[in-house]
Image (cartoon, rainbow, N blue to C red; front, side, top):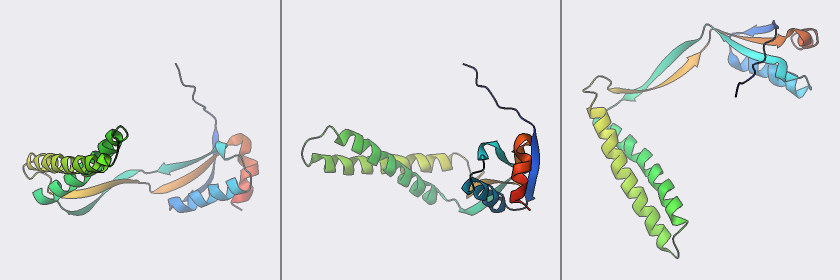
Length: 149
């Protein structure tokens, strides 16, 4: 099945250095009933920014893995608990949580250990743009211009 893509000419309505300002303009247009389906926010000069959040040790890797594994264990325990009669579901949930936490810690530790010190830090990666341009389809450009005046 082929997906049809809408290709139309657009006009630059406004340009901002902050995404929140571009979002605010489109929100104002939407609140006023403007057909925002014809509006696009385009990031110009996009780059990735990696914010280092701390040192990653084997202990922190194991702890992080344990937390993720515990959540997975709770999910599995809840699914199996649907088919458990009586108060046994609570024990099943606790056992699933503990098993998930144990294996998550093991996998977190081994994953960090296997890097051999190549990445001893944790980080969060985001996308940022130099400018955020609000574009509108040419057919709607005259009507949209009143929002930036």
